[in-house]
Image (tube, rainbow, N blue to C red; front, top):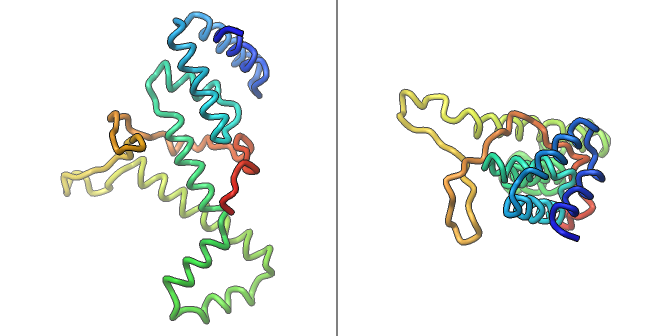
Length: 185
């Protein structure tokens, strides 16, 4: 099967509304073979990383040069932090050995499932603040003449100057990730 036909098959099987499917079918068909191949390769890479419904992100990355795979990967890793309550509590124990009594009192106030639910909500809020921190940059940038950005880098440390942003779009849908693909927790 050639690249375009494979892309068409993927688009038709993705969870997209009909208007979006028509958009991608039409626009991808008009791209040159090199870009079509790049989109297909990226969709495969995203699928292998556990992401689902990847045509919009792959199309955006290839046609607009937006590092969507890197952004999605950051979202995924942050969500893994939210989901790893046990690991977070173990780390809290290490950092705050003197406050073990406080943690014990917290645990006495809630059932295990209530505590886990509360801690996921709380951790998700902290991660959301971190997204804002990345997206908005240094609130004192005018005074400090200093700001920051999260750059996409390769495994060898080289980078392309592509800034990973768009965290406030908040479009990481947990259902669009195959959590069963994870074996870390």
